[in-house]
Image (cartoon, rainbow, N blue to C red; front, side, top):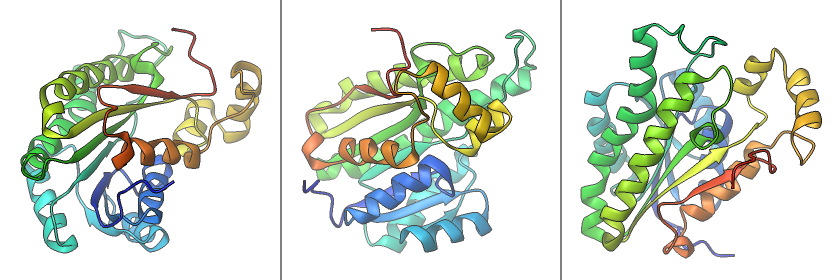
Length: 250
């Protein structure tokens, strides 16, 4: 299937590893000109070499730095960002939902909501001018069905999901789509840290996920590439679960 994104300029944040890097590789394989961003120069350069993307160092929690990132990408790749994938790490966990200090609440909201919105504010004018844009947020099933121990993620990701639904309706006529991927348990460093080891995460997955296994970053990337494609032009305001039927809610 030709996704119709060859030559399009894409930016994927949090792309030095895991899901972000896999999405960048998939978009590059479809012919997009891909920029990837991360806080670590060493990791982003390694990911760029592996994916065929161009690496940029940026802390996406710093709102003031984000318009500059878009300008750098535009200059380096020969055009404005047409596909924006906002991908971030997860906030800390705690079995006591009332035990998080205020600073951790603020950091989670900045990373999961304010940072992506700042990037969107910077990217949308050029998308509007062209009448085409794809904006995708990599979130979690926690946005729809809260996960024990992940109070900060549950609350902030639900806020981001509501923001994307609002933006989808406001900008649909401009040819810009806003969609969200709700990740289930995917085989990443994050899931290994939450369960103590990858082996333990896999054992729990066999018992609790109807598909009987963890998902892969490549499966996430395949879904992301379609939602970023020309063919997905009438899909907007949606949240797609990639979780092996783990979520119970309708």
